[in-house]
Length: 422
Image 1: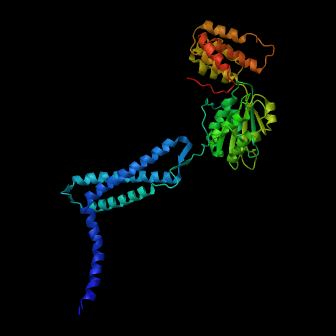
Image 2: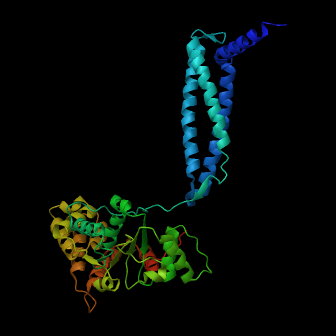
C-alpha cells in the first residue's frame, strides 16, 4: 500500500500551479525573437486587410460612407499600429544590448516579450473582426451644408447689416419664411450665399438645401435639384407626383432650411414635395426675388430689402476691382464719375471696375464717363435698364469680335442652364 501517494499528488499539483507562471515568463524571454517575427507577420496581414477595406470605401466614393462598426475597427487598427511601431523600436534597441539572444536586462526582456504576445493576440482578434457581415459601407447622409463660393461681405457695410437682419429673423422661432428682395445686380445672391456658408446656420438645421429657381423653371427641374441634394436617385419614368412623395418622405421629420434663389413667381412647395415650414417642425424658407409682391405671394413672414451701396462703399468696391490706378490725381475724378453712374449697384461696379483694371489711359476713362452718362435708349428707364446699360459697357470693351460672339452665343441659353463644354 502506497501511503505517500495521497501526500505527493497535492504537492505535485501545487508545484505545477506555482511553476507555470515562471515557465511562461521564461518563455517570454526564450521565445522573444520567434514571437517578435510572428507579431510582424500578423501585423502585416492586419495592415493589408485595412488597406483592402479603405480601398473599398474609396471605390464607393461620396455616395457611401463607412459604417460605425467599420470606422471603429479602423481606429483600433491605427492604435494597434502605433503600439506595434513602439514595440519594434524597443526591440531594435534591445538587440543592441543583447548577447547571443539573451539580454542582460532580464526584467525588460520579459516585459517586452509579454507585450509582444499580448499585441499579437489583439491583432488576431482584429483580423477576425474584419469580416463585417453587413458590409463596410452604407448610403451616405448628405452634408448639412454645401459651402458655396461667395464674395466675403466686409464688416460695417450695408450688405453686412442686411445679412445680420436676415440672421436675426432666422433666430426667431415664429419666422418661418423670409423674403429677400431688390433690383437685379444689387447683391441678393451674394447675401444668400454668405447666409448659406455661416457656421451658425449649419448648427441650426439638419440639412440646408439650395435651389436656383430662375424665370422659366419647371417642377421637375426643382425636384431633380432637391433629390440630388438628398441623394435620391430618380427614374425618368417616375411622375412628378411620385417624386414629390419621395422628397416629402425624405424631408418629413427633418429640420431643414430651403434657400430658393432668383424666384420670379409663386412656387408651390407641395407640388415639389417640400413639407410646409411651421414653428412646430422648425423648418424655414428663405427666398430671393426682384419683386416684393413675389414675397407676398409666397406668404413670407418677413421681407428684407437689399439696398444699394452707399457712395463710400461703392467707391471702395470699385477701387478694389479697378486697382490703385484710380488714386492717380488725373484719373480719380473720372473714376468717381464712373462710380456715380453705377448707381450703387454691386454687379455693375464689379464688372466695370474689372474692365478698367489698371487702365492708365485718361482718354479711355473719359470715354467711359461719356458712354455711361449717355441717355438710355429705352423709353422705359426702369431698374433692369439701369443694370443693362452698365453691363453693356463691359461688353463693348471685350477685346475682339470672337469674344463678343462667344458671349452672345452663351446668352442664347436659358437662364441658369448648364452649358456643356469641351
